[in-house]
Length: 104
Image (cartoon, rainbow, N blue to C red; front, top):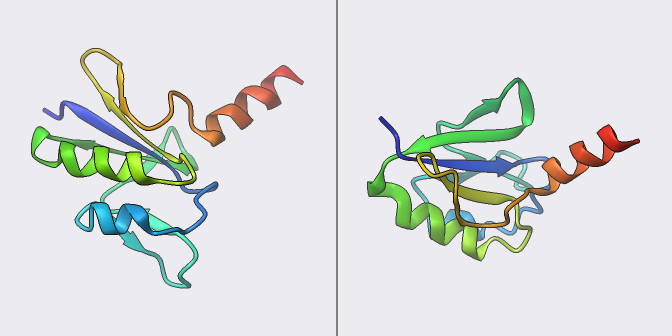
């Protein structure tokens, strides 16, 4: 069973590709060259703009490095057992947008 989860806000990705350099097994450039994709990731709760991937400890360091070097702050790595964010922002831009829409 996976112990960690990567959250990736593809909508707000600026295509700096730092995650691809930091974790080439987890991230790849999409055709067109303006975004990246999370390899094996899938939409969270049907939201195609927010992708998730459950990972094991063997890929944790690479995932955390990718989140830490992302200039757009669109990656977060969470410990599934504790719920603690290990790398990246506590809240992704797309999650902040959703809260703002609900508040209106």
